[in-house]
Structure formats: C-alpha cells, structure tokens
Length: 231
Image 1 (cartoon, rainbow, N blue to C red):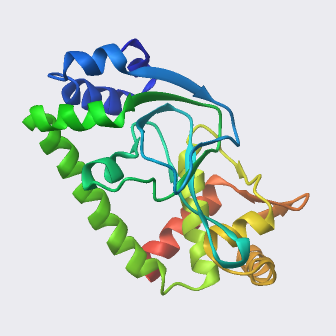
Image 2: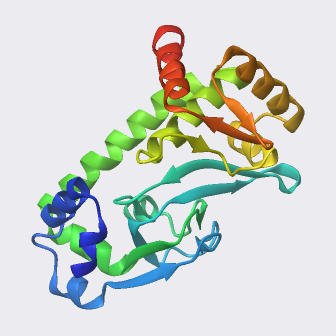
C-alpha cells in the first residue's frame, strides 16, 4: 500500500477509505507494475484477468474502427480504476485497449479476488458503484453534447482539457500530430488543418514550428468561449 502515496492527496484519501476493510487476500496478492510510454497493458478482447489502478502517469483508451482506423477516445489519470466495469458487470473480456501515454505506475489486483472483496465489503462496493454511476452519467451527458459539435468546438474542448492537465506550465505545446488530433476528434486531417488555421486567426491558439501552442490568455479565451457559446 506504500505506493498509494504516489497518488494526489484527494485520490489518496479516497483509496485509503476504499481499502479500509479490504480482505487479507487482496493485501497479500495485489502487486505493482511499471508501464512504459506507448505500451498497451489492456487489450480489447482479452480475458479480464486483472483490475488496474493508475497511481501515476496518464493512459488512454483506444478503439479499432472499420478499415483499421485507430480512435483514441479518452484519457485516464491517477486514481482511475480500469477493468472494474467488466469485472463487476460479468463481462468476461476487456472492452477497450488501454495504452500508456506517459510512463506509468499501476497497482494490479487479480479480478477474481477483487470480485470476492466487493461481495464481502458493502462499504467498498457502495463507493465503487456510486463512482461508476457518476462516471457513466457524466459520460452520457458529455457524449450527447459532443456528438453535435463541429470540428473547431471539439478542438477547443480538447485543448482546454490538455492545458488543464499541465497546470504547472504557462504554455501548452501539443506534441500530437495532426493525424492523432484527427483520431481524437473524429474529423479528417484536412478538416483539422483548416480549423486550426481558423482558430489561429481568431487568436485562440498559436502555431510554432508546426505545433499548436496555447498560452494562459488563450486558454482563458477558450474557457470564456465555451461558457458563453457551448454550455
């Protein structure tokens, strides 16, 4: 449990409460792994054998679409529990592939032991059920909004999210290629390039050596735009 201290304070407190009455076999059989940037540690279609808790680093969900197109649809950070939905729902195989965006430290719990723990620990089960329902409700609401947005608005929301993940940096410089941005937003590269130019002309972002850059003032402009226009 010592490595749980890698989590931010809020997530540490949550995990401390969650594991308060966990079974002895959980404490004896949980283990930790290091995952390198770019490595997949969950593969869609494989048997759901383990539950993963992200202690440090960032990961992303990947879905393979028709004609082999890769769609990266969600990022997960410290405190997120992965594989749990399939385990509690009785789904035998992982539904998505998950890849490390940065080097990550993960806590791993065998799925069978996790399920037995939840059956015995009513408080922990309630905590996780509440969290899962909140996440599903929020995701459903966001999906309904997102599907109606044009390319510029999707880019703005994505850049706001990325800027907020880098709170210690005054300027966000996007390392993702235009192809990766197309995968994230669901638009083609040609449309992405056109809308980046439009946002640049409006002052929402800058392009430096071919990379998108967002300053604090530009981030605040995008925030104001979303509050007044999108929500």
